[in-house]
Length: 470
Image 1 (spheres, rainbow, N blue to C red):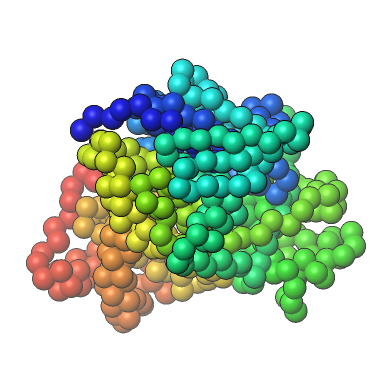
Image 2: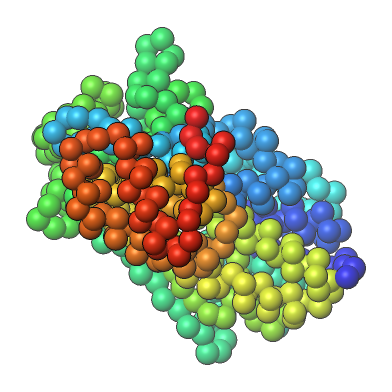
């Protein structure tokens, strides 16, 4: 079905707002984007929001559809696994996939610049910066904005309004006031603070490159993301308050140094600016937002974090938001000018998946913080990797389904629940357990895994040749 030109207002020029605007402008619509911050291409991201993002296949699929995927890959660092820095000083490498699959670490600021730059190349698109939303009229729809430089108030009217203005969305706030509206906002009990690791003296990586580094310490952790210039962005995750190490208990440089010497001693030499970084940067909160409906008639739609903000632990915030844009494009291709159908179809498809990845992100946060260094967890992952190597099209671990396929989050969760039953059975098998505890090679498990998986799936699972890891 065809599309006639519409005047579309987009609140928010962040990652999702920029990509959404590219999709809409490419369809021939007249698009106006508004953001309260200065032009991201000329200034830094607001404090506390510059933590690296990780992009995966589903995010790149949405970027590739508008031809910007390769440009984003060029400013990203592929990460093929995670390096676990255990409390006893040992280090372990855990690959993400069995065929060198990677997630990509990228600076939020650099990514926003690329997307906004492409958006502003569209001839039917305009972007207005330093404009604060004061009023939202859902029925027109319209936005009344204050210019933060001059104080001038201006009303902008359109045919459709998209709220892509983040977890604290002004558009969503107005929808909450207008009618029955379900809304839940939950803050994690922990926050994070960014720290910086410079490249080595010769410009090389100070830590192993092409990997995410994690120092799991049960109720707190340190996690590091590589940057294109061979630096790392680290984030320290701790509770706001409590008996364990918490931000409320780190009040002086001595407190901070004691914490790192005790918990992260191998990171100390990498952080000569630890004190100034820690005390000079804000703590960033982590929030989950759920709401319904995402639409107001055929006039207004919430998208990205405005509809479904999640904690960053699974690295799916941007990927999920980008996937929103791609699914919306599919709905527009199917229903054309029937915006009521477009919005209804989009909401029906994305709401269950947004809820699913919100739950998974919370689970994964606890996995990273509490489990990745745990012996039992590592043994389970060893068996999972072997199953995936032997039967790559029959057994795909949850992380791989989320990061390296476009399977919906809901379907990925369903598969994981079934596969977990198999994995529990394998881990409870005395012969499998004996070989794992003895440290036998993963290949030595093959006969046992073949017999037990055949029983589980009800048919022989012949090894799929040519598909195991290189």
